[in-house]
Amino acid sequence: MTIRILTDSGCDLPQNIVKENNIEVLPLSVHLGEVDYLDGKDIKPEQMYSGMREGKVYKTSQVPPSKFKEAFIRYAEKKETCIYIGFSSGLSGTFQAATIAKEEVLELYPNFDGYTIDTGCASIGFGLIVYKASKMAIEGKSKDEILSKIDFYIKHMEHIFTVETLEYLFRGGRVSRTSALIGGLLDIKPILNVKDGRLVPIEKVRGRKKSLRRIVDIVGERGVDLNNQIVGISHGDCLDEAEKIREMIEGKYACKEFLINTVGSVIGAHSGPGTIAVFFLNANEKE
Image (cartoon, rainbow, N blue to C red; front, side, top):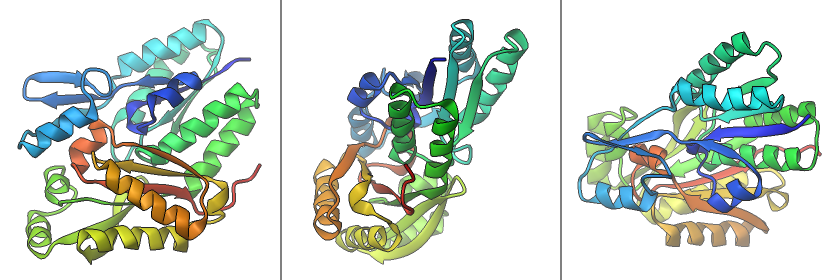
């Protein structure tokens, strides 16, 4: 039976990977005033970051259940297995929308072989999971093998990131106004993780350069078998710094393969320009 991988635009995967690996991506939405955009289709991250630097405020919303229902019905009618790998339910309602849609489709197509998986991950952190699953599907791996690998990645994926300013996290309700003000005055750069699907502060560092160096150190402290895995790096329209941190990680840990891309519009609307995030596994990948 054919296995299809479905995901949403919170995965921040480059378009060449999406096309080459036959991944279907449903876009979340970005809103500027009364204007609505589909993430990655009607608005590009660079366009949004430019607007944010000018003071524009963007809001976001989940993929509606109707879009998932349309996709699931297509796969059900073709009798194809569909594995939806989704954005953390702790950060978006998109996974819940997918679950609602799947239940509705099962009423129409009781034999539909569909799965909805909450990765608890964000950006390339779950993009790497989607990428691995899609490659396995193309290689002809079984459904059980793919689901097992997805579960392993979910349990062991690290997200370590920092932001240029706390202002955008404050707007999204992630930090208090007091923390944002004090952070700006003292040049405090938080280092955060995604744990159990939610943002968790690890520590605070003064200064941008120190925060990037500290991220590199944490990669070494938490990462396992780094030179035999893909290390993901996403950035909020600051490619030079993403390349710099890649060079630091490569030089220090002999990593050979990286996946670098811009933080997409949906996540970037909350983290802001200047975000740097690194994603890697904290356990040996089982073959």
